[in-house]
View 1 (cartoon, rainbow, N blue to C red):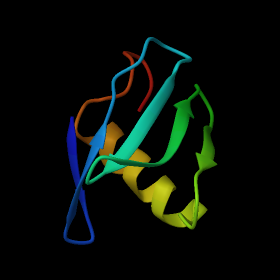
View 2 (view 1 turned 90 degrees about the horizontal axis):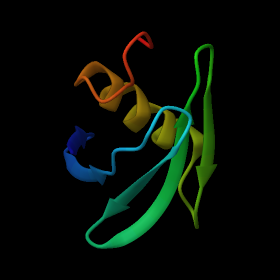
View 3 (view 1 turned 45 degrees about the vertical axis):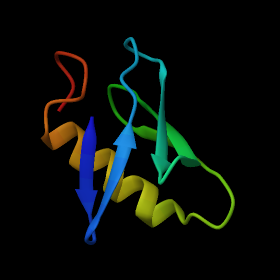
Length: 71
């Protein structure tokens, strides 16, 4: 799924509930995140900040990418 944040379009993979969503920009992995019922666990890669990865995860959820029951 394409997620636009701060003028850039990130590719975010889908995952089963509790699975890891990989985030790429221009073919390069910048991190991943796991959506849980009460929190989002972040795993930034390289120089990606937690803040940017969290913003991407939140936008992904708003676009309907979260498992049912998680909002």
